[in-house]
Structure formats: structure tokens, C-alpha cells
Length: 445
Image 1: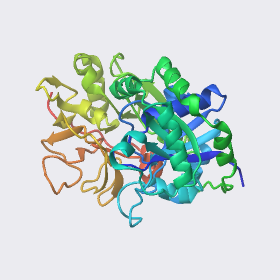
Image 2: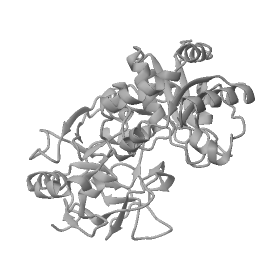
Image 3: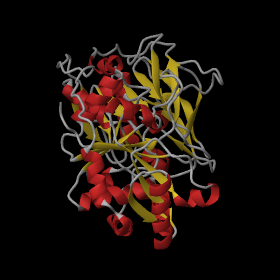
């Protein structure tokens, strides 16, 4: 048994946003010498800032819908080794009525991993709706307090009515909240902004109560099943697109590829003219290609290199923004259109409105290098993009046959769903199968 310092932090009010208070807490811990490894309670890639900019460690992901209890336990242990504390972040009260219901649950992870629970209470929402029912948690963080006097009153009310300790309070900090909300996906939180939030937070920070909460957590059994360690053959070279346009990956997926023996090499579709030498598989993750659409479109050498890679039998897996880059054209809401790689037979359209990632389960209807016909896959569908597909659909969509979630043919797979491949060992092992024969390109230039 290993005593791993850990906790869960989550909202309990509809419409509450814990970004500001989470930055304040993480930065306060960092400045106090505590390095925190953050985990999202759902394996859907973050929409705005990344916790790495605050903690120095890349954010990780757990998910009770995609993963078994043993795998969650294993990932928590394996990826927290360099940290002093593990923090799982999400929303309480999201437990599905049935384990097969879609979507990961912070409550379920708390049960599986014996996590002490800290609820974030938004004082601004209390002013509108009153104090919510007492949550089943161990401590409280108060967010959005209007001033020092209201902070004291809130602490008194919560501790008297709920019998729960308040371990910290963040004031309104409206300007800082606005600055965080404006951050583009993948952009780091500026250190000066972190400093301002943590300075406000420390006025009502109770580190002794926080330390006591962590120390009282039950021991967590060390378990390491379901993650394959054998070095597999052949050992492919996987070229991973990584730059300002493409940065959305699950770190555990890349870790597992390397543990299995793959050589993982970064390249930049924005700046490089070709793929790394001896590339077998290209992995294009999500990001914000729309912000660099003209530069990506103008890099004809890279587009030609990707097409030549496919023509010679090389494999590509592209998710969401990466799949948009492989399409024939990328269209933004203003109507501006950019010509992309022309590998996937589709037009990728950036969507406006709600971009929330939705839990999705699909069935593959056409075999490809990544999955065979009939394979069922769970993940989170991005709300930022839609494909108008001209052919080569790899899964059926009951809503529209022209807007599949998975498309491609043979050597190329493009997905509108984020898949946590470390939770799909049979899919991850597809990277180590022999390459398919050369095939014609999927779409005309």
C-alpha cells in the first residue's frame, strides 16, 4: 500500500466555473513548494488554458466511463510519481444512474480512488439562488466572494449550517476571471495573472486544514493491470504534430506508445517542410488550426509530404483539428475558406455556439488500419467541428450520413471524437501492426 497524497475538487452548482479558484489554489501550493499533478475527471481535451502553465506538469485524464477502476488507479499512480499531490478536477453530482451511461463521473472516481472531496461554492450564485443543499464532501472552497466581510459571513454560514471546514476563499477578481476566459486553447496562464489570484486567495487560505484533509485520506492500493509493457514488434516511428496549431494529446497515450517501443518524434506542420526520416505513422492531434489556416495552407511542401506518405502506404491518424487539416477545405464561420491537404474527402467547418465535448460511442462500419468492422469505441465528440463528407465514411451516423464522426480509407483515419488510446489497448496496438499495401490517394488535389 502506498500513501499517495490526493484529492478531488469539483463544483456543485449549475453554471459554476472553477477555473479562477483552481489557478489560485494551484499557484498557492506551487509557491509553497507543493507540486501538483492535475487530472481531469473526463477524458475530453481542455478547451482553454492548460494546468501545466500553473503546475509545471502536463494535465492528465481519468474517466470512469472509458476506464476500469484498476486502470484509473494505475494511471493515477504512474503519472503522479514526480508530484507531491494529485488533484482530480470536475463536477460533483454528475454520477450516471448506470455505469453504462455516457460520461465520466467525479463522484465515481472518488469512490474508486478514495479521494477526499473539496466542493467549490460560487458565492455569486448563492446570492441568486441561496445556499444549496449540503453536499457529500469533506471541505469547501468559496469562490467569487464580493469582499472580505462577505467572506467571513460565508465561512460562518457554511461551517455552522453544513459542519464542513472552509479551507480557502477567493474574492470576485472579475478582471482576472475575464483575462482567463479570453485565453485561447493551449495558451499558458501568464505568471503575473497567477500571482494576482494567489495573492488574493492567500488572505483566507487555511493550509493547516488543507494538510489535515489530505493526511486523513485512506491508503490507496497500488495496482498495475491493463497497461501493456511488452516491447512489441515492429517498432514504428510515430511522427506527432506539435506546434501552436496542434497540441491536443492525451499524455498517457504518448507515454504508452513509447513504453511499447515506438519512437515518438515531434514535427511542425506550420514550419517544417517534410516529415521526420523513416516515419511510419503520422499522428495529428487537435488544437486550433483555424488560427493558422493560411500558414498551414501555404506550406505546400508539408502537404505534399503527407500526401506522398499516404501514397507510399504510410498511415495517418488525425483527431478533430488534425482531421480538419487533412480535409480538402477548412471553412470558418465568417465564410472564409482555406485549402488544406486534400487527403480526407471532406470539408471541415468550424462551428459557433456551444463547443462542449459530448460522450459518444460509435461502431466502426468499415475496416481500416486502426480498427476492424464492428469495433465499438467510446470517446468525447468535439462540438467545434463538423465534416461534410464526400465519401469514405467509417462509421454510421443516424442523424446524417453526410456528417460522420469517423472517416477515411485504409491507411488514413480522421476522427471528430477524442479517443483516449491508453484506455483502448487493442487500438493502441494497431500502431505496431505491419503497414498496409499502398493505396490511391483519397481525394483529388
